[in-house]
Length: 201
Ligand SMILES: *[C@@H]1O[C@H](CO)[C@@H](O)[C@H](O)[C@H]1NC(C)=O
Ligand SMILES: *[C@@H]1O[C@H](CO)[C@@H](O)[C@H](O)[C@H]1NC(C)=O
Ligand SMILES: *[C@@H]1O[C@H](CO)[C@@H](O)[C@H](O)[C@H]1NC(C)=O
Ligand SMILES: *[C@@H]1O[C@H](CO)[C@@H](O)[C@H](O)[C@H]1NC(C)=O
Ligand SMILES: *[C@@H]1O[C@H](CO)[C@@H](O)[C@H](O)[C@H]1NC(C)=O
Ligand SMILES: *[C@@H]1O[C@H](CO)[C@@H](O)[C@H](O)[C@H]1NC(C)=O
Image 1: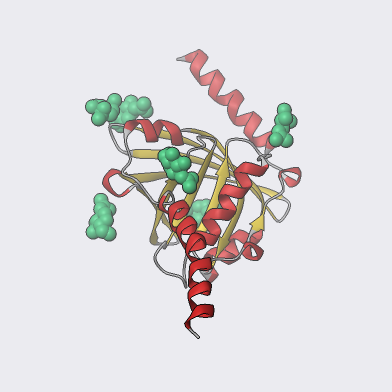
Image 2: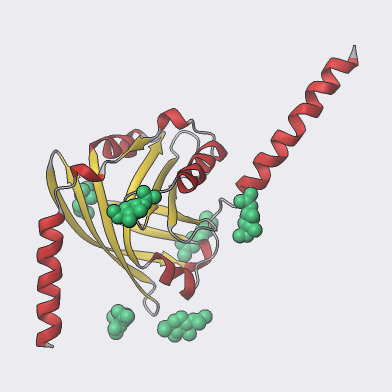
């Protein structure tokens, strides 16, 4: 009688082990100057999933989004310039995030509250995951970002792994579509303004 049970447990074991091994890599590590440099640059928001109604609403409105991070090692801040397409319009936002190095987190003040994002790196330096409420199944939110708008299958499967690790389902993922981007002209204008300023300086 014990045999079917034992077999079931045995066949589950490798699965469980594989899962916990892979998931061990999805955690926030303390931030260093090197990881701050890794965050700096242009990123595309590719996809996200959330159990937090507030974040979910927000994700649903995003047709496309990319952003520039500019980390300051001495102040432990990140200047964030976001270009999001919402309702077929470009919405630009500038904000300053503070870095909690020891926790591997970044904090923004939006809608009158603090939002703490845990930064998860993978072995692929071209992708970053931002995770909110990683320990709360009712509120968890995952944002998947990459340095290109078109990610590879391997990069997408890393994100899918992370989704499964945190107990969400792939069907919950909402994808953006770079083709719907309306921010190109504004980004170009900002670039030209910056160049002009540098030339003047
Ligand atoms: C976890 O990360 C380590 C170090 O980057 C890497 O060698 C290993 O392959 C990763 N494991 C998985 C399952 O991705
Ligand atoms: C970092 O911030 C300090 C203080 O505001 C400023 O003096 C410095 O130029 C900044 N560094 C960079 C790389 O922006
Ligand atoms: C990080 O960068 C800052 C500013 O460049 C420097 O003062 C500090 O010593 C660096 N920290 C490490 C651990 O290298
Ligand atoms: C780091 O995390 C701990 C535990 O959640 C928290 O008590 C602490 O305030 C955090 N540190 C910073 C600088 O946010
Ligand atoms: C832009 O920033 C404001 C103020 O921080 C915030 O209320 C708003 O939700 C942001 N919009 C986007 C699209 O990020
Ligand atoms: C992504 O787009 C770039 C430029 O359009 C192209 O060179 C590259 O091959 C594409 N990569 C993938 C994985 O589709």
